[in-house]
Length: 134
Image (cartoon, rainbow, N blue to C red):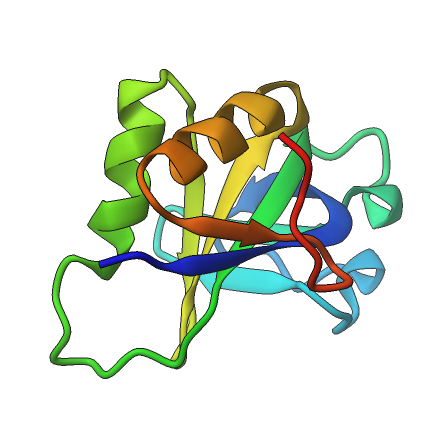
């Protein structure tokens, strides 16, 4: 199944805070903020410009949003995107919401990621919904 993905304009950071930490002020709800609390950690994905320098994080992630929504009974949607990226040696960080999935790739691997997705038959659009060069 060919999918459509949209490259979002934001450059993100994936942050790790200790388990039980309160949500920091710099992480006030904003576009493209994902928060996960577990017994082991608090993970935050947000605009890297909002993250203080002393926070443990990986910066430089670009986000590809799958055009959903996808029914919960559909299987293999995310795998169709991850397989060509894995074959191209592109590392990912994935986040899912009720309606869709987001695949983050490092800026340094963005060109290779887009090429791999297109070679697999997927469409990649930019923020303005035009085709991303690649």
